Image (cartoon, rainbow, N blue to C red; front, side):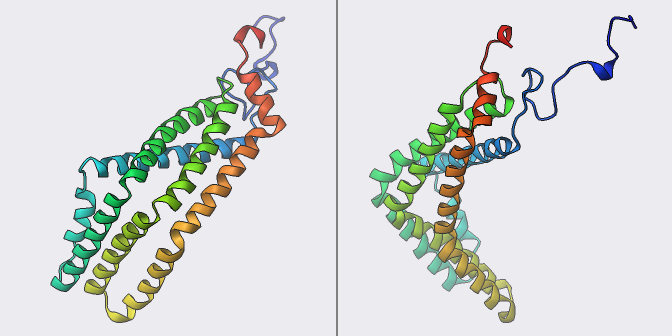
Length: 228
């Protein structure tokens, strides 16, 4: 080793938590990592949900039809078919509102996936765009809940109803009753609870992205290599 060359332990390199390609001393705050991962998860959820809704309106109803096929007893099957038809009717009634909202959910999910992934890579300053998309997806999720509430309730009644029928067929009464109580609570509070959680989490993501350390990190990551 040349005398003028510092030993490996003394050489400067990326600090733990810094983005790939970022200059030494540029650290990614932990809260920013959590926010970007959460944005990535929300993006995947939006993309999947939007794709499913669009598929529903393009005739891909096999998934919901399979829900009714797992019920064995005739009385339960008739009730499952009734719940399924109720969901189909509610979906048709909400088509004018649900279809454009599904398309917006799909597009925002894809954009959120791309922007969050680039933010995690730390190679571009897309902070403002990411904040806008996170806010937009939260608004669309709230709008979808209130504008298509009848369809969402009918879908939840179908899903939880079929699960209850299966448990009633295969579980003894002393095990079925506690499970039914839990499923009833999930049916009642699950969707609005998830909506509240998602809205609050989206607001926290925007707050994390607006913090000075996050802003400095993205500005550093967005500079040309020659300026670093």
